[in-house]
Length: 125
Image (tube, rainbow, N blue to C red; front, top):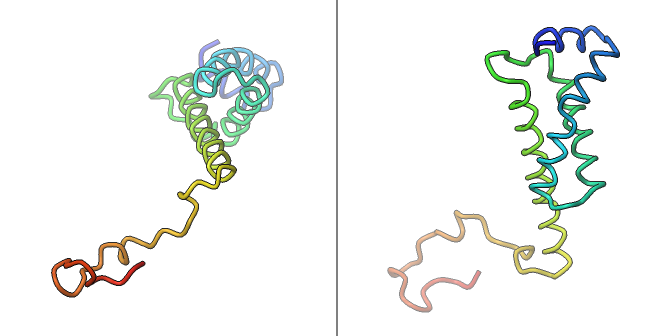
């Protein structure tokens, strides 16, 4: 079945089409997750499910100028990157990394000091 017809049937609520849609892309999405996250079986499965949930919500707006598989993989990659950022945040917090201390906003950090940057001319931040 071609992609457009499959998507139309999925949107119409056809259970066979939904199953075919899931089975057609599940393994490829899972391999993509494993590639980015390492072998984290449960985490990869969670992301694959999340990809299908997002895809189902946005499927009606899908632009058929592109391949459906490319669109699904891009959703998957974005979710994997988000999961990696979450992991990094947790690791850094657990280690008490200085990244989680207060960092002044750029306007404060780049504010010019009174006398052309002479030592002692800028207040300590």
